Image 1 (cartoon, rainbow, N blue to C red):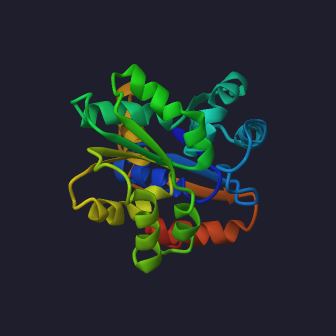
Image 2 (cartoon, rainbow, N blue to C red):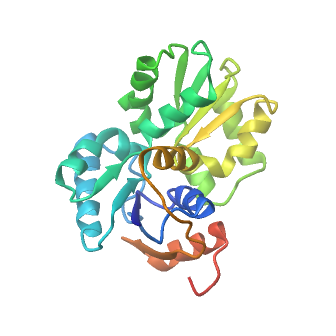
Length: 251
């Protein structure tokens, strides 16, 4: 199978990393809308328009499946994309909910959802969690994490101060949904902040769990082809991808 992965920027590479680790696809096409990132501060109509434009890009490739790695797109534009796509389109919110239910068997668990302003405002996670019986949910917009991560600050004083700013008044969560594809890159720091006593759910592993449940994969692909595209400065995205994914130069 050939899969497309769409993100507003570089954060969706964390989903690509999970796909590579599980060797599910023969070819991966990645597109980051780096010219217009971040989506998380934009209004719904703009998010939908940008997402449909990205969908047109992927129609140039014979992909079998498109993953919208961006939580904001998954919250606001998924149905519109599905209506116009000639292939299956999967978002990250529903798989994240399923993964949460599997990881936290007690519906009384204290769940913390982290995401961009737009994702949190959509209440997509809270609504679906409530439908699964989880009613002890706190949603927190933590958009400052995105530029910090894009600066490569995965540890250190700036990140620690930002976590303290966001988390200091919260009850200790049992589980945290990392509702932005950037956030797995600071997963270790978040776990440390909560004294190594919290379960994290992030989009990459949730997507893999969902895919393996809903699709049949007959073989492993040890060296998939990977192509990276961006709406602005694609070379910079490719450089980040090679560093984050530890790819050999020929990829």
